Amino acid sequence: MGIITVLWEKWVEFRRDFYKITMAAMISPLMYLLIFGFGIQTTSHGEPYLMFLIPGIVAMSTMTGSFGAVAQNMSVQRLYEKALDQVMVSPTPLWQFITGQILGGALRGMYAGIVILLLTLPVQNGLIFNGWSFLIMFLNGMVFSTIALVLSFLSKSYADTPRYNAYIITPMSFLCNTFFSTDQMPGVFRRIVGALPLSQASGMIRAISHGEDPGTMGVIVLLLYLAVFSLIAMIYIYRKKTL
Figure 1: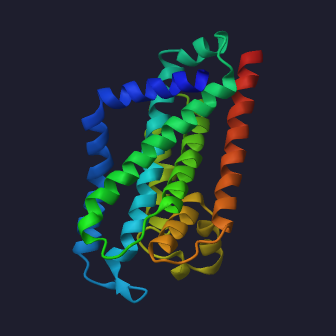
Figure 2: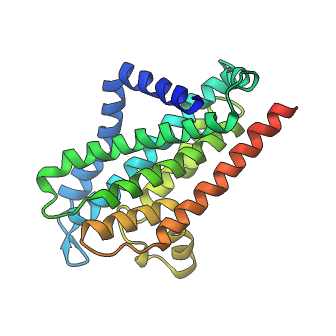
């Protein structure tokens, strides 16, 4: 019941701010597509660069949509509205509250990714997006929702959220197999960047879009990130309740 309550809250918020959320999901990715995809007439891996770029933008959109949906709201609710304190004294199981936040953020990320797919539908030119693509998009959204949840617990003020975007989300947006392949990076740096969750999601979505086997290693890596950050979130919130 607690999970449904949190998801209902997210749904009410989504309906209330539908146009704002949709425009926010469209503007930056659309600018990247116009500037890099259409403005730079080049090829990548023997195909038009736009065909390489679209899967990366879709993966990036699931990341930014999920992270933004959780980080900002949870920071405000915890620091100013004290809603987290109210949840702790309520009969709602805390694991259900955390699960609801993660699922709600992942669904918001999925929506952002689907918006980009619809926008690029006229120019996809044979790219494949199927059930596996959407599963990876959702899993990627869950990972970044969980990361956002942990960071919102650690925030000391509302101003910390934009800093997290600058320190974490923006670098990953440009480095993690979105605008160019990590294969072109120097050895150690390539392995570090390649192990990040967005690199894994972008690689798998791109492989599927070109009719290739994405493998299972990327899914395992994303599940490990999800497990680790979910555990950190659980430890934080249960420890805070016992204080």
